[in-house]
Length: 459
Image (tube, rainbow, N blue to C red; front, side, top):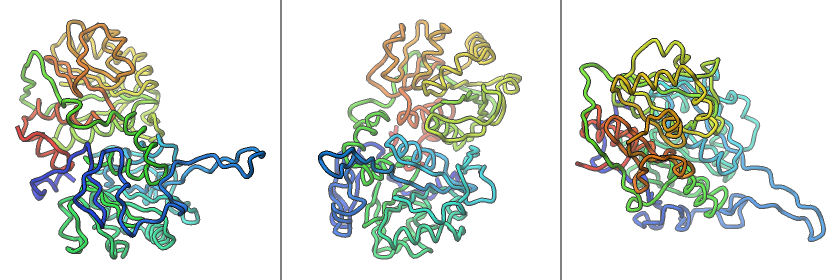
């Protein structure tokens, strides 16, 4: 999607407080946690099988044992060139809500390389999903990923059947225009998509909104709107209260509640070469954090190496996403990096903290005066090594009480000299863009944000 930046519309939609436009009131602004309260006349009635109510335990009679409702089944197809932020955020958010999410490859093999180079491994092949019934089919975008989805006959048939049988389906970024449109699944549906593909949509039905719900179809604009898109799908499957709870757990908040960035002891991060960044990962690392940091930095033409501290390059993220690292940490340690960034996830951070090689790399990084940082629960690793001493930082709310340095609570990202930290999860988009701004300047960060369709300050 890097090539799309020059043709973006000048106004990016906001990530917090996403606006759900319905066919009845496209300009209405809703609270971030309520995506479906102004549904169009085409939306299904509350008595439908896909009513926007939380999954509950049903009881046949007042005296019998309760019968558990099966989990909602969701299909997320991926292919070569799929946008990794979109795919992983959709999967992560829906799994947090309790959905049974199947990631299916439309390629001959399960492993695919996403649009910004992240290697993902699907759960199964799309052919194995042909006879299954899903409560939701959600297509991530990306190029050429959307083309690969479009050209998959099995996926086309699954999605066509989904629409015909009045079950939920959705698409984001390029996928509405590139896949759903030629499949004939946008007829009489108001639709949005990535600004670079809006011209492909029928003019009368194209809507420049963050999220668009029209009947059983939900569409959205890009990586920067993925959380809002995924939470909108959660609300339709499980209800508003579940969507609100998941949104809060992801640290999504109104724009005026948390400032995006604070910087102390300002120093330049300047290099006479392409910056090299090491991102160590482990089983249990927060998958959305890993993928978001990698995606955004590579869009900014930063040389990013993902290194596994496990015995294998294949790691399992905290929400079940399978990621293939570029190298093992022992091989990666043979090189020098301008930045080392630690992703979070409680289990992942615990495993990172046990890596002797990583400990040595971090110690050398500080002694050499190079940049290092951490997000979510991983600032605790830096704290244990004395790398936060005399520094201002932030971290996930669950661990800030364990840090003895000065903690800045009122902001998403904190930079102190050559240390950068973040609260994690949804705030990692701002974290990665802050790194881009320090490395390449505000204009480059803003350009990357526009490609993401993510709201970013003009100055």
